[in-house]
View (tube, rainbow, N blue to C red):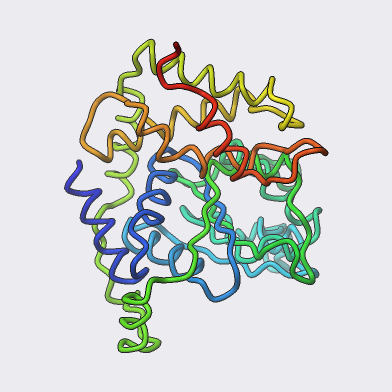
Length: 305
């Protein structure tokens, strides 16, 4: 199991250069069964990472470029009248893939953004009064540009909460930039081997719940959660769903490290990616979600005094 994970990380690292930690976190998100939000400036490799994950995991892939005139039917599909059969025939949209890339999701209107909510929450869509299941596994990887850029619509808290993790890739190191310049535009996606198939991915996901949580670890997560609800810097604390998401990702991180039990370092490794986009600072606090997470880490002891 661990060899499959390490091979997948190495494969993606041949395409997304110098970003092993980000690749591991993105893979952790999918192995936890969650959806991933990639937020960064244009041209930072968000779409490349999504493509590389789909290739390496052997998943069917669909991509939707979100624009202001995109309609929900462009994502979900629609029924078309067949004259020969005198009946309507459903034409499936790109959401009926195992991995859907929602590119620049915050450039679409809130109505179109909300078309993904049922799919992300329940792995099904309701069209023309009929419920249609989505493939298993099913993941959404959405990319978005910073909200201060023109032509963007902020994702509401209800939709942000559907994303298990939010990641930023960031600028590459000098060494990675040099490799990019030498390689040119040839990303190598087409030659990327499949290192883990969908069935193996589902099996690994099934092993996550077997990773043990000690009583002290559970108490630590509870203290972190309680701090977000009590400290004045937070306008809105971590919900039970957010707390469960943190535990799920910590379990997966431990599994990826070859352990069958969670330690506090596993929580620390994933906490910002899982929690930052779920927290709202108070009106008197000038920091963002990442600053709130740093405050949590400084203020809550792993072992209480």
